[in-house]
Length: 284
Image (tube, rainbow, N blue to C red; front, top):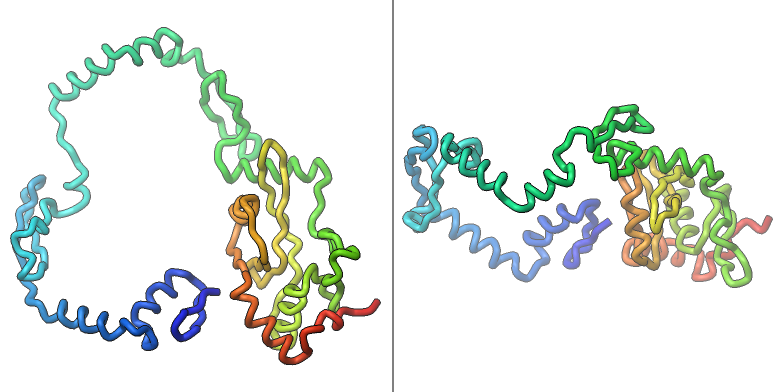
């Protein structure tokens, strides 16, 4: 969740927050923004008729009167005309001759780069699609989607498991973990999250889904903390470079709850149960 720094209104998307901050009533610059927008609207607008340089079609463009003559007029009626290029046969022959006479082309041809016998046909290990690749390329999948599935299958063969309560380690140096009403919590922040959602009737569950990723030639898996329907929740206090690789492996929406986002849950629990709310863990 993202909060406005002026009115503290919450937004799920950062783009929504950006659109709100500019026009927030508590923003000290909002009046200046409104005046500028009003002045811009009051400027006289005119419709200019233009002939497309490509197809010759006539079209209209609406511009501000003061901008007339400032090279703001369109030259083409559409992206198709703007991106399209007409090449003559002579132009094509010149390009072809230049490429064939280049040293890079000759070296590549002599080394077998354009020889059909220098390729091989490989079947994708997941979708069984036939791929054509160079002989020196070692490839087993045709796309990133198939590559992730292959990582998942290999991880399962190696006996990688999913989330297990206390897998982070609840020892004498980590006393803030435990069970609370059937939910395992690895930290006091997770406990505050669980208490808040249970007492407000918000449905959630401990996540058991695994997402596999590969770093430094080794396969690892990542298990977000909680799950709300199709949304994954990760409670994060400290981040390093490896965490961003984990986030990219998630197939679906992943919401990160950092220190600013956890103030809502922590303030509620502390106000109701006190700072020693970790004593609420089940004694058994």
